[in-house]
Structures are given as C-alpha cells and as structure tokens.
Amino acid sequence: MRLSNLPWVLVLQRLGIAVLTLIIVSFAVFFATELLPGDVAEILLGQAATPEAVAGLRSAMGLDEPAVSRFLDWLIGLARGDMGISYVNNIEVAELVGGRLVNSLRLAAVTTAVSVPIALCLGIGAAMWRGSLFDRVVSVMTISVISVPEFMVATLAVLIFSVWLGWLPALSFGANVDSLSAMLKAYAMPVITLSFVVSAQMIRMTRAAVIDTINTPYVEMALLKGASRSRMVLRHALPNALGPIANAVALSLSYLVGGVIIVETIFNYPGVAKLMVDAVSTRDLPLIQSCAMIFCVSYLSLITLADMIAILSNPRLRQ
Amino acid sequence: MKREHPIAASQPERNARGYTFGWVGRIGLLIILFWALVALIGPALAPYPPGEIVDWDYFGPVSGKYWMGTDYLGRDIFSRILMGARYTVGIAFCAVVLACTGGVFMGMIAAVMGGWFDMILSRLLDAFNGIPSLLFGLVVVAAVGSSIPVLVLTLAAIYMPGSYRFARALAVNVNTMDFVTVARARGEQTGYLILREIFPNILGPVLADLGLRFVFIVLVLSGLSFLGLGVQPPYADWGALVRENIEGLSLGAPAVIFPSIAIASLTISVNMLIDNLPNKIRDRRE
Image (tube, each protein chain N blue to C red):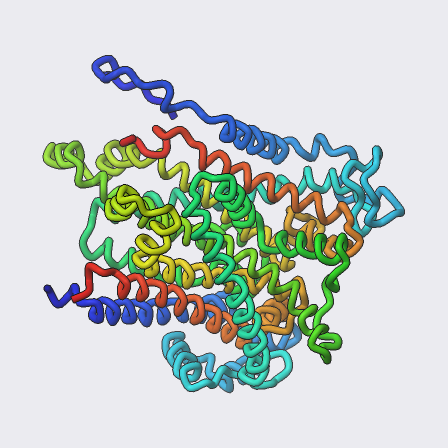
C-alpha cells in the first residue's frame, strides 16, 4: 500500500487543509471588517473629528502599520485568547462572549441530543421501507423544511405550539427561569425549531447513505438468501453504512451554525449569535470579528470532522 | 438558446419523451412564471399604493377589502407582497445569474487549463466554502452597510464558489472526452474549447444547479432581511415583511403568514421543477 493511501496520512492531510482554510477564512473576516469600512478612527470619532485627532487615534491604535502586520497581530492575539476591546462599551470582548458562548453551546447540545436519535430512526426507517407511504411522507416533510427559511419554521412552531395549542410562551425568553418546568418551556421553542432544521438534512443524508449500501450486491445476496427486510437492513447494510451516517450527522450539525443565528434572534435567546446580530447593528467591529471567528471555527471543525470520519470509516483504506 | 445544427439530419431522431415535464414540474414552472410576472408588473396590479396606510386597524383580518389583511401600520399586505416580489425575486435572480456566470466560466477555464492555476483557484474558493453563508452576509453588511447592489454582490460572492466547484467537476469530465481531444489536436484555442465544446455539454446540469442556488439565495436573502440587515425600509422584500409584522405573530395575524407563504411557494416550486426536470436536460448521457 502506498504511503499516500494510509488513513492517518489522509487525516493529517485533511487537518492541514482545515488549518489552511482557517487562515484564509480569518483573513477574509479581517479584511471585510477592518479594511472595507474605511478608517476605523474616523468611524470612532464621528463626523466632528479634527484631522489631528484622527491621526492621533490612528497611531495610538496602530492603524498606521501595514495591513498584513495588523492581521498577524490580530491572529496571534486571537490564538492567545485576546479578542480585543469592544468599541461600544469598552469591555473586553472575551468577557462579553464568554457567558454567551456557554448558552449557545448548551442550546446546540440539547438540539443535538434531541435531533440525532429522531433523525436516525426516521432516516433508516425511510430507507428500509423505501417507496412506502411512510417514506414518501418523510421525504415531503424534509424537502418542505429544507426549502423554507429557518425563521419560517420558527414562525410555524410559534403558531402551532403557542397560538393554537397554547402550550408554550411565544417569543419571550429568560425572564424567570427558576423552576425546571419554566426552563423546559423556555428552551422548548428554540430547540424544536432548530431540531426541525437540522433533522431534515440529517434524515435525507441518512436515508441516502443507507440506500447506497442497500444497493450493493452483497446486501441483495442477503435478500436472495431469504433474510427478512429488517434483518437485511439492520444486520447487513447498517454496519457498513455507519461511516457515511456519522459523516451525514456531522455535516448536518454544521447547519446549526446558520440556524442558530435566526433562532437566537427570533426567540431572544442570549447566545453568541444574538450578540453578533446586535453588534452588527451597532457596527462594533472587534465583537463582530470574534463572533464570526467562533462560528467559522465551529463550522469548519464539524465539516473537517465529517470528512475525517468518512476517511477513517472507509474499509478500503484499512490494513 | 436553440441553435440549428448543420449536421442535424445525420443525427439519430431525438426522443421527445426525454424532454417532457411531469405534472409536478409543470405546476412548479407555472408558479415560478407567476412570480416572475408579478415581479415585473406587480406594482401595477396592486389595489393600494404599497407604502400607504389605508386602514386604521393594524394587523387587520382577511377581508373583501384587504385580501390578505393589513400590517402593523395598517398598510395593505396584498399590495406589499406584490411589491416585495420585485425585491425578493429580482435580487435573488441578479445574484444567481452573477454567481453562476462567474462560477461556471472560472470552473471551465480551470478545468481546461489545469495545473497550478486550477489548484490555487480551487483551494482558494474551497476556503470560502468554509464560511457559513448567512454569517458571510452578516459580516459584509456589518462592514459596508446594506443596500441593494451590496446585497446582490454579497449573495453572488457567497454562492460563486459552489457553482465553480460544480461546473469544474462537470467540465473536467467533458474535457477528457474524445471530441475535446480532437478539437485540441485541431489546434483550437482555449476560448473555443470552453465555449463551443464544453459549455454546451454541461449546460443542462448547470441550469439545474442554478435553480437550486436560486433557492439558497432566496433563503439567505430572506434570512438577512428578517434580521433587519437586508432590504431596508421603506422598501421591503418578503423576509422584511415577516420581520416588520413579527409582533403580530402571537395574535396569529395574516400579516406574518402570507409573506411566509409567498417565500415558501417560490422556493418549493423551484424545487419541484428541479426535481422533475426532464432527464435529458439533467444529464445528457441518460
């Protein structure tokens, strides 16, 4: 076997690509937020600023230096956890982001815990009874969810669960979450919405992965031998589909990143995304940079993880 | 689009069945044409001026006078949706045409040229795929503010890398085929190879991909407008209409529901059309 085909070499290669991508992405974020808007010193001082004051602030902030060295300084600062200081309220960005990040991660974790088992069952079921009524209903549902915006899923969830059924509060969050039931109610709506968005992708990909395996000759052989349909899928096809399924799960979870931005805003959830959307309206650039990098890093790590699972689970690369 | 082939007579008879649409595809096409028409002449059809307050009752119900109710200020929702079609469909269409034209041509050039040019371009554009689309929009809008040209360019930039990747993968396959090798041996220039040999052979799948990308762009545009960062007041696309009236959600106001239905009808109908495209358009080899 050639060296370039060893799984761990491929994984290292993939990690290298991820690091390279991260550097390019961070440059894009830096470029967009520092260089596009024009002179930060002028923005900060407002329209009444004298040229001397602008020049003074520029040298104090180090804006005279060339863009590349500013970029490197910023990147090194980020790597050490120094995210800079917010323009708007002069608080360390790290301090602003810290608590919010925990909230966002908690939301993501709960959503994952809810959506993965449901999506796997529905996806594998749809593949097992392919072409049946169940399969068609699931397919139509997932396509509908995928082809409408996230905020519409949220709107529908509010209409159904709080306007018509009256089970949950509509758009308020975090007012008083002292009891367990209050907390469950507060989390329910964001989690339901996000789970719908993420599961729809996951169901489709899982179904496709299992069907791919079912179409192989050895699974057909199992069927010809007289194995039942469920045995054929669960014992013969599923073990080989685990890699692609894990890949699908990691990829679909990357949709959380986009979904969370909408969902946190609509439900007023105190997470990083809400912080970032608020920062955009006040043009607080250091805060936007840091939040954007947090999202990019999580997105990239999920995609990289998905690729690495695909590499490691490929039986042809095993020794 | 159609061009007469001088050697058409010697070609085998085309199977007409491969080019017909299923009924689901036809419904999709019909809805798309409807919205395209509304985007062109919508404001002329509107029963009231879209920006004018016509009713004292805000979040009014569906009635004979106001077909889709009134919004948070008492403006007619039906007129505003007809007007919003112009922004949603128009911006998304311009962006998708820009993204796909740029992506497809760069993809074909990369496939024909190969070598380091291809490698660097592919790596660079792949890196841009590492930025979640909505986030990309957020960052740009934060940096330069929101206006319609900025939105079109940003959305085009977000979806160009994907289109590049798709077209490049198709073009690499076509590039190794015999007729391209023959043309190259004849001494044809790169421009000729791209336009006359490769482009006609990837056109079908590229058009299908354009449709899907249109859906993604509509979704991101609506998302940005919903966050208040897309089309700015007094103008409103469908996403902005939902945002404006979101307060009415807990009342179950039609002002929130109808713009949402408009978005869904557009995106779902494009999906219906793409999923039911005639096989011959989707893949010429079939």
